[in-house]
Length: 189
Image 1: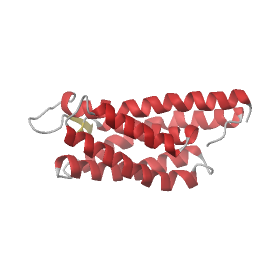
Image 2: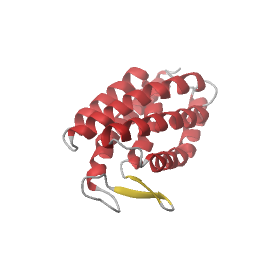
Image 3: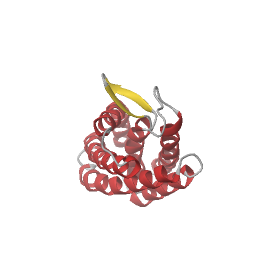
């Protein structure tokens, strides 16, 4: 890899890192402050499909799952875990402790599930790796977060649909990154 390709890889990696770490407190903040419906003692909700609602943080978490893979591709797994911890620490300023603990726990567990899928697939294709690992990660994340934060899986379907929308929307950008990486000789870490 040339020095300019290496510089670009690291620069993009730290941009993805900042986006990923920042998405965690934003998602946690959204749960209590942003939605079409904000019932008392429940998360704010948004529609994700006809007749299906999900906690509003689902938008940012879906994006976070994709950014997490890009952080790993550019900087490595260590940096993805550090981003989760930083995002969790920042969340203490904007969300109740029970949400922060549930969020960080869910992200860490889903990170390792994501890792088990993403790492072997990334050499076969970035789009496939990101989509497959994000789907696995979002199921783990949704299940763990909802159970820990709310003691209920009532919004599981909405969580999975909402996060899946963000993964689907990201596919053209991921395909662009993969093609550009090949053209510039940028390799995954």
